[in-house]
Image (cartoon, rainbow over the protein chains, first blue to last red):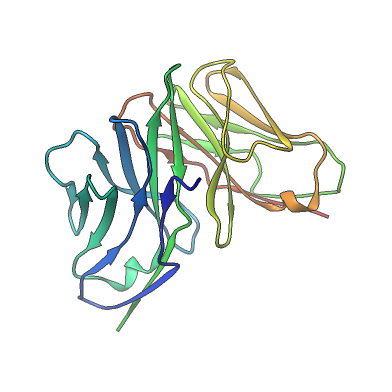
Length: 117
Length: 113
């Protein structure tokens, strides 16, 4: 079963507008973490933001914020004041803690964001 | 800065060949991962390791194996390459801490003909 679901294959947003990229996840563990990564056309993977399952507040990093709704199992990324350089593929990922030790990180299928003038 | 180095940026191999993809990290990270990235499918986890000589199957391990003889090196092995293994392969590493982020290599684009 898909653990991380990103339902928007592509999104368009106008420059300077805010945009929300959706991510839902599935786990029965109480301890987990959620990451967002950006992959521009160059191919590099850029870490954006992290949210722990026990964190009391929603994570923020500059123009990025994570709308964490634990009961709904969603961890949507909000980008404020979009810029042309935000055009990229965005991936949501979940960290699961294994009983034998170690962590497993799985990714969603991604959302291609295009920022327009 | 953390460096995750993948030995080849592009590789072309023939069906049936044994293929080795090498990944080395320089920051003493416990966790290492191999993903493949295909359009529309995102990053899919092949294998991961949280300690030397430890390995765990990811979501799509069939047709692959791994080796982690030293902490800094994690190798992905295609025992008998097939055309459906043509893909971009990404190696990543991280500390074994909850909030630790993944650091990625630049990827290996493998073509199996």
